[in-house]
Image 1: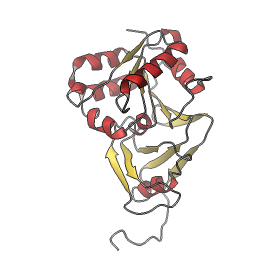
Image 2: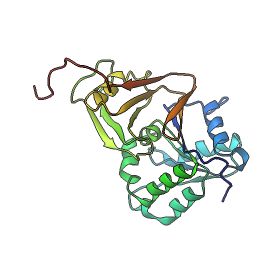
Image 3: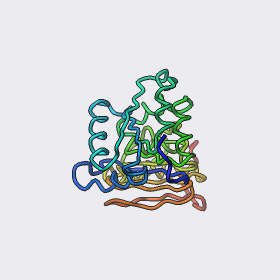
Image 4: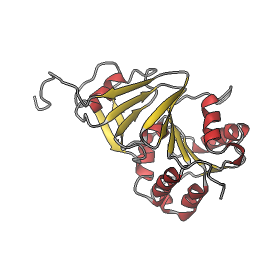
Length: 239
């Protein structure tokens, strides 16, 4: 097993559409956190509708950025996530990266399975767990699986689905400013003010260390919604 150079649980959460053909600064930093030329990375393309092509694309760019070994884990059903072989690959990884696509596929196939548990073990022992777009949303306790776009929050227009729970007490939204997702994130956090909303722009990432703090990298911005002390005069949801 590759030596783990870091024991602080670290998440690398990208808002989608990160540069993969130029300097690829976000993915380059991910490889560095995973151990650089001593890394062993697992790509999970399950969310994508073209997983073979997506796996090949990320294998190419991560290898170009210095990763000496990139394995692919692609469960196509919940039963596949009970197979011990994919979990064993994750147990040996210094970095795991989940691609974009449909976060509902990830929520159906990963949480509550041996593969999902392997992802938790990887995170706990210090392997960097990364994801982009759908692979970002799945990291939190709850993720937005349906919602109207736009800047105005509206009641009962968003739907939450259980995520992996690697990032506790947080709801992550992605492609944030580019798809004007302010309203849907606000509509989710307002009735659940104990949760923190984090909206991440494209080609932008938060690097979360030990579940307590994050730093922002990339070309965009991160929008944080904290409603713990908010006061509203909105009508009761039953009206």
